[in-house]
Amino acid sequence: MLVLRRTLLPALLLLVVSCGVTLIAPYDPEIDRGCVELHGRMDRFLHGLRSEPQATFVDSLDYYDHYELDVRALRFLARGHDQNDLSVQQFDNMLASLEQLRLAHSAGPLAPETADVLRDLFDISWSAIRRLELAKKRGDG
Image 1 (tube, rainbow, N blue to C red):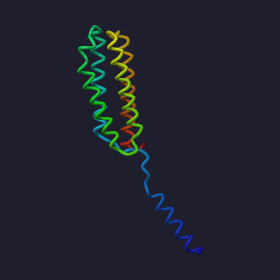
Image 2: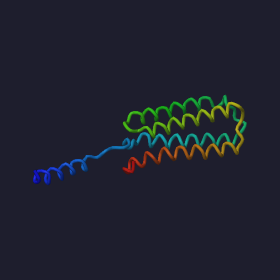
Image 3: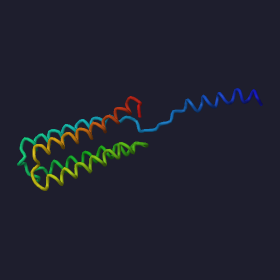
Image 4: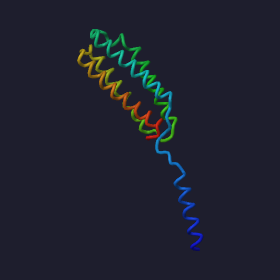
């Protein structure tokens, strides 16, 4: 019995240690590329609002609609991976931020200072989403 314990226990321990446990979804290059693209589009949009604060909400309706669809597409990709709740939650937060921007803009033109603050906030949000995706690529997740 002692011999069995001495050989079986290390073998079982080796088996358990060698079985990798995935705690987060794998890296998705489409999500990574999408984050970079959508960050750039939002940055250009808010820069435009800062440059032309008289730009109307009605003029921007197509932008908001297309942007929302594109964020939802990335969210859909993220939901396709098991154990990707954090990424999905970040996309939900991005959609909520977009809705807040839409509501603020629908109330009237945005002041240049407001556009600057919003650019910073969207930059932080997109950076967080991308950092998580890149951490998956490195295996830090």
